[in-house]
Length: 279
DNA sequence: CGCACATCCTGTGTGC
DNA sequence: TGCACACAGGATGTGC
Image (tube, rainbow, N blue to C red; front, side, top):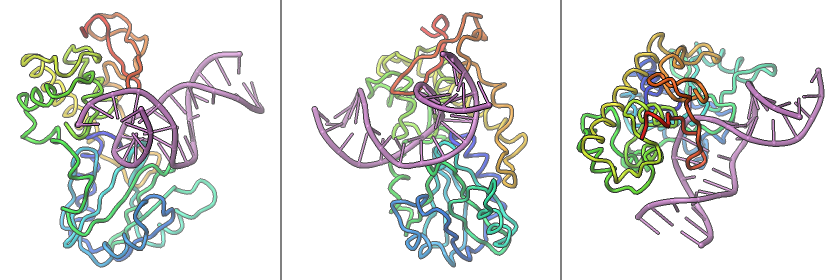
């Protein structure tokens, strides 16, 4: 559930399921998912604790506990699965044929939250305090935070010589934008992905800011209609392709000028853009 | 400090 | 159909 809108939708759907609930125990199926922490570390910090709040920063999802913090990152394919209880969790997570790839799970009185990722890229960690959670403090301003303004974007862009696309992916500057929505925002703002971030003028920064917020808001609307279904592991956010204007549209006509969308490589990742509209 | 690059994994799609 | 290979919505640590 990679980028900000998807994680936000997950946070909203998860909140009513776990807020106020006490974590009875941690189930571990693949210890790699909490690496470099050990299952014992995580268990010690979460078992018996109550979930005070669910919140998101950038692409991270957090459970604030009455004491301590659970930090989750889904990377490419990670997802949450909800089970009615320990019995269903154990049955489905360990079944030989087409089992659900649950790495870790938190058992509550009302059900169990599975953290699943067949590629084992996603991570779930536990921290003694919020202050101890390093990943949280490495993040720049969240793209949905009120503090994320056109002026702030201009300031941060001015401090980076990198191409705009790579600048947007840097979570320590602005948190939450990934490979899809960086291409999308640049398309809406009509900016060239190779343009150095520090060459952005104030007007261009304002345009980019507006595009980022628009693209993420629009995607969040999509992600909530319908909202995440934690019961079906095959479920994924539907209909997002419909709102995409550049991403994964190589060779297809630009929605503004009808010329073909290009795919180029930047920093080892695909960037999609319109050479004609985005100068 | 900034940057290029390898690395962590497994499934799927594509072209031959 | 079988196979090899590129590719995937990400972050981090390394060496330069």
